[in-house]
Amino acid sequence: MCLAIPGKIVEMDALNAQLAVVDVVGVRRKVDLGLLAEESVVPGDWVLIHVGFAMSKISETDAADQMQTLMILGESAAAMEEVQGYGLENEVSANEEPGPLS
Amino acid sequence: MKYVDEFRAPELIGKAGEEIRRLADSKRHYRIMEVCGGHTHAIYRFGLKDLLPENVELIHGPGCPVCVLPMGRIDDGLSLTAKPEFIFAAFGDMMRVPGTHGSPLEYKARGMDVRIVYSPADALKLARLNPKKHVVFFAIGFETTAPSTALTIIRAKSEGLTNFSVFCNHVTIIPAIRAILDSPDMRLDGFVGPGHVSTVIGCRPYEWIAQEEGKPVVVSGFEPLDILQSIVMLLGQLRNGESKVENQYKRVVPWEGNRAALRAMAEVFELRPYFEWRGLGFISQSALKIRSAYGEWDSEQRFTVPGVRVTDPKAAQCGEVLKGVLKPSQCKLFGRECTPEQPVGALMVSSEGSCAAHYNYSQHKPVTIASAAAV
Ligand code: SF4
Image (cartoon, rainbow over all chains, first blue to last red; front, top):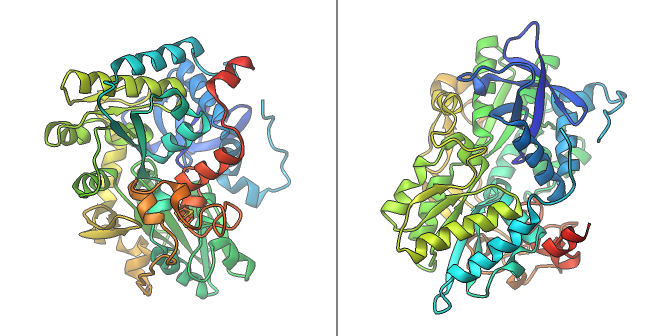
């Protein structure tokens, strides 16, 4: 829950301007952009995600650094579990193939 | 983007270690508190203590929200599962935390409807998917997660979704630091400030620590180099007789914080007059409650909870460990009655808890800088 997970915005949600699809190491999930209301967020931007909400915009280098931090902390599996769980995916569509991890 | 499995700038890590030795006055003993549980985890994981001279001591702070939550709050939250129409939703971190009559996971095993969610937004989604049920979201965390809970409550209100409420345990970091500084058995020289909390609150809220208490604060990232650089910055200030707030984690933390997040929190939450922290006791204005304008989405305003206070098992010394007065291994239960598999206290559950970190990295060798350089 305290982990910040780096992800890349790939597309804005067509129906809800507050949501966007992010890619975290190949896993795509919707995250909420409501806490970045003061910034413009466009596809291609990198963000740090906490509990399903994009919390800050960061550079691509910093995103790589943050993913590296999670890995060396031994927390990257927990982070991917968190991302895969966004949108209740584990619960509602448990049969879906998880995305690649690398 | 390339994901690399090694430390950033290993050669600089060695340099930072040397710099720490150079700056630390051999006649002084330094006690530096890392406030955030994420830092505690990183310090154990990387064996950073081995890189520090003996007179630079790191004290683990109260920044693990799961660890500081008193058991009574878990009992209160779980009491709501007694009604069959209730779904109890919480982050995975909470699931194994013991309450008086078991952890959320044990309640689930007994047939209560307990679900893991990874986002408050998903607890709200559960409510949408289960219109005949009432979803209680057990909210926990410092300012890192509180804005997301706030925004979720705003969304619930704007959708008019009333089968959803939040059992709010959000706490704020500044009053906890104040309580530690006020505690007579605690002597500290400076703080490694929390990284991700500061993304939200910025660096200004720490200024009183530097100005009134005369203790330097350096907001820090989580990599070994970040933490060591922060210690260099703290020792540099102490050597020059300075005390100011510095931001080592500029690449992520803006000085002013995240205004949209602060706005969402101010809209939904107000300060509780006081709140109990495990180990630290009651701290005034240290936790958030939901404003009456959003009372319909507050489990405590809508339903009756017992409001129990439970003292920790007698031999458990979670409080002393949380305050930094005892080391984890000095608790009589450590590694015997209390292990990550069979936790007695919350500090043994969360990976950010100092007991779990100490247990895990005294059993398995930490990933030291030397071993990582060899990868
Ligand atoms: S070892 Fe267990 S009981 Fe003792 S302080 Fe740590 S968590 Fe609490």
